Image (cartoon, rainbow, N blue to C red; front, top):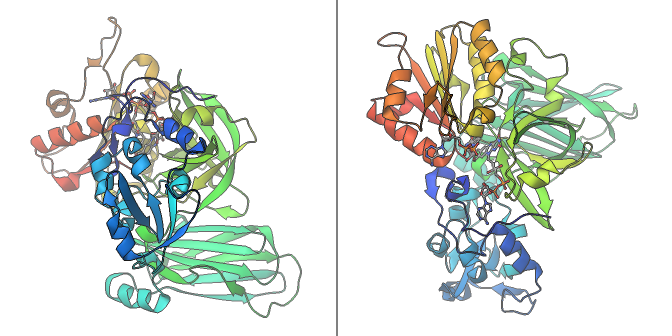
Length: 510
Ligand code: FAD
Ligand code: NAD
């Protein structure tokens, strides 16, 4: 059973106080946590005032419900009475009121499109819009979408297929040169086949019900210089296919990535290992019928059902150890996905995750995030500022930079934690300083024991100016920062005060 603390929510130090893009969260009254909301939705109370009826809502009707105690909002054509939810909204009542009596889809997508509002607000559903509101961009009819994208996005990709007796090859022509194995995510189950290709900030989808059965295993090849992706499927029976199959939703569409929607697949828990007293390394296995490689610096969303409600939280995949990426791992690492996750005893999601048994499943989404490895081009000095589990994006970044960037002279990590016991992979980090003379690490503790003779305190201009020494006056620098939101916000402020430019700083947020 979940342990719900009685203080104000979110806790003063909780990352829940700020959401994506640094938007502040407000303190909620006692008894207004997400868990309290879930309980209310299960109580059988009539939350819409419509006694379970669903109605068709006209635009005129929607506009009338624009007050706090009578507030309807439309999201993707469905109308919700959010008045009962006001006091539970982590972003506060005023934020919700911005969409009162109107279509809040764009606002919702800007702030937290990954939140599963269908599940959270299902008891608040009033009905559908009678006349469909302007479709979100991702749902434009194809002709319209293509017109818009021809002006703004990459030139339209296309696909083709061919077959031999035993194989079917689907070829995607992206018309882009910088396509790699992590640009395409493939999932197929039974007859349905889905391949999402990320081309710059756009998503190109192939979504088909195959005409014949194929085996689980398949391979993905990239012909980089022409931007061609080949997905080779194995037929179950050696018959000749007359057609590839029938199009499913949004097949052959190119939409801005932010409008593409998140696709999830079930992954199985393979192992769980203690890393510190409260942080564990989780290893999940992707289904054999999935090809997914999370790009460096990006995160995914994990989804679990907690007391009948789907809860989604972001996590950043890491490698199985800090040193492993210097060589090809023995295990095919594209089939496993690792996470370092801190368990908060009073948290909503992590205790549930911690209770999973080996063999249990969790849903894992497609990747998101705006870090680009092109930020490493010609880089000489890489500085990483990490606090607590804010270390997670640094793991792959660190390995990638040390392995792939010939211009790199120096990589320095300043790792902020409360106590020595909280430091993730301390001995591996120390080992790395011996293995690679370009790498150095400095630990800073905010609540050390009196014997600690290393650096102490919180992020500060003094700590940063001493740490961020360029290898030469004009060296190309990148500073990556990640941790609790106040840490990241203060850090960025101090970095600007130290005259580092916007382009020299990358902060990790949702
Ligand atoms: P929450 O329910 O959010 O609780 C968090 C804190 O608030 C806890 O201290 C809890 O005690 C307190 N709290 C909860 N309810 C109440 C209440 N009613 N009253 C008072 N206090 C309360 N985390 C990782 O460990 N690893 C990662 O790789 C990682 N990657 C991330 C990537 C991104 C892009 C982002 C934005 C976050 C990432 N996080 C990561 C954080 C993660 O998404 C979750 O926020 C974290 O795991 C906490 O989730 P939770 O539901 O268990 O805790
Ligand atoms: P924590 O509470 O153990 O704190 C670690 C260190 O952060 C502290 O020692 C201190 O130096 C600093 N810190 C904490 N609160 C601070 C404050 N109010 N002001 C200044 N410095 C402060 O950290 P944790 O529980 O491991 O939390 C890690 C955070 O990192 C979470 O909020 C998580 O959401 C975030 N995170 C974000 C990403 C991302 O990509 N955006 C990835 C992983 C983790």
